[in-house]
Image (cartoon, rainbow, N blue to C red; front, side, top):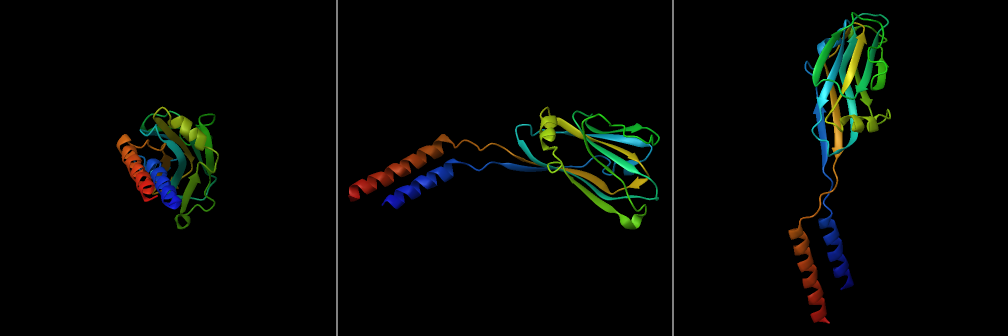
Length: 197
C-alpha cells in the first residue's frame, strides 16, 4: 500500500511541475546575402527581439557558401552589436582596409578566404556560446534589440546569412484546478487505504 501512496505523490509532483518552454528562433537579413558583402560597403543588421522574458541558451551565426572570387589578402570583420538600427543598414567605406566596428560591441571573428575561387565555397558557423559571448547576447537582447556588424575588405560572394537563437523560459505554475484534482485523488486513495485496514 505504501507503494501506491508513493506512486500517487510522484504523479502529483510530475504533473505539478510543468516542463519549461523552449523556443528556437531563426533570423535572416534583407537582402539575405547582405548584397554579397560588397567590399566597398560595411553593414549593420539589427534584430527585433520580442522574447525578452525568455532566457537565451544558445546563439549561432551562419554564413552559407561564402568565397572570395579572386585570390587576394581579404578580411571579413564580424561583431556582435548592442543596439543597431533594426533591419539592415549599409554604409560606404570604399574598402577602407580596417575594421569599421573596432571598439564597438563584441568582436566575433575575422575570416579570410585562403583560396580565392568559387570552387572552394565555405559554410561558416560561429557558436556564440562557445566563443564566450552568450551572456553578451542576453544582455544586448534585454531591451528588445541586438544585432551584428559586418565589414568586408575583399571581393566576397555568399548565398545567405542566418542567426539561430534558442531559449528557455521559467517553468509555469500549475493551475489551481489541477492541484485541486490531484488533492482529491490523493484524499480518495488515503480514504480507500483506511477502509481496507
